[in-house]
Image (cartoon, rainbow, N blue to C red):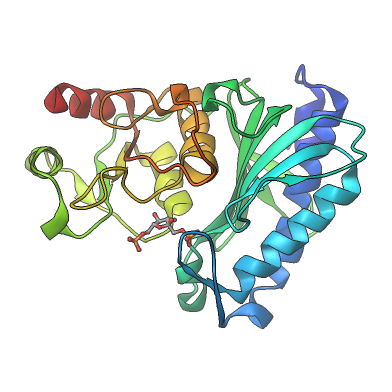
Length: 296
Ligand code: AFP
């Protein structure tokens, strides 16, 4: 079986990018170890007004410390930080976007959550399509790493020796029949409601957990579509362009799928601010294209 290191050595990546991917992937161990002692909600909110749980803050602080020490990252944009953090004295010029713990409300009920990362050259505030690499670690019954360096999408599993072993190579998203939609049904806008009714009529099955990274991960295997739409009073939806939409959109696109805000490829949107939000439709190409056709 191929290890993460062996795989990265077969790619055309710069050594510093390989080192950065390996370093971030390695942090799944410490983050997972911190689950038990960091269960409680804190009395602080992030910039989005969401109450943080201790593990959000712990993972954010941990990754910040590790990346600062690495000397590989110049700019770090985190969902848990109000501003971009400039890391002085870096020898490589990567910019990293991170959602240190996506789906954190599920930590207390032991459902799958994850860490989502986007890696760019230079600046963090760029169109998603400029990404050099995207990855996420998913903390489920297994810890897995899904990664792309624009040479296919591959899934690795962390073994008991702390090594990532390749589980799935060059994964391509099929045209399956899983669907998920965020926001309250009563707040859905007419076009979204019509699309969901279409999917249900076509026999799509509902699978929504409240963890974007886990809900999208299942699509790589089973196919279908995840959405967090624009909804009454929130025409930009809820999810964040930089931290959630772009890295997962990049991975799904590399696997032959699509990500759209209803009319355009999300990866072509220029971020206007750190907390830029977008309506999201992500998954199998055919399902996303059908949505765009119905939304016209
Ligand atoms: P965080 O736990 O990182 O804030 O993310 C949760 C999330 O942004 C995303 O992972 C889910 O898909 C979505 O919110 C769930 O939202 P609802 O609670 O409104 O369903």
